[in-house]
Image 1 (cartoon, rainbow, N blue to C red):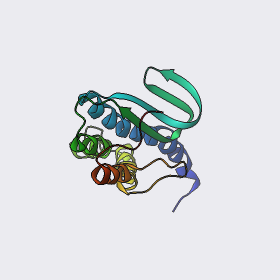
Image 2: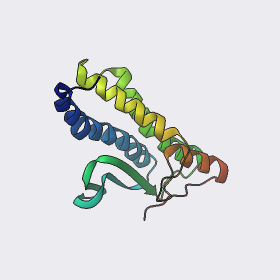
Image 3: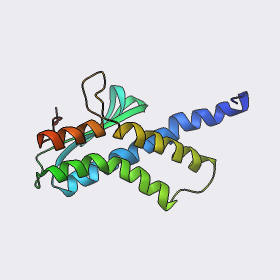
Length: 152
């Protein structure tokens, strides 16, 4: 049951833990895309851009979502694209399994949000803007042999 005493932790979860989970997820995509020689652009949040540092954008609603786009891979094979799209969920899973974070309420919330991210990112669908989830991108790469979401 949700009570008034849960409100402070709700804000911690929503404005700190969830963005960290998003950052870990996007870092997975970024690092693996760079490993294969890709040019990347990634974003944390949605809405008006507030920070633009190299390939990273941070937007006003930094707690809402994230995305990573890449192109010009040195190793442009189907398996490299699949690896890049799986990397976000794998980074979340690795951080959960290695228990790097302290085993406290914060860690349990991190695990909860990480599993949420893993589940919905691997589910194949396109969002309202037509952008594919990681699962949809994997499906498209396997079906068509190439990524369908290059850097804008």
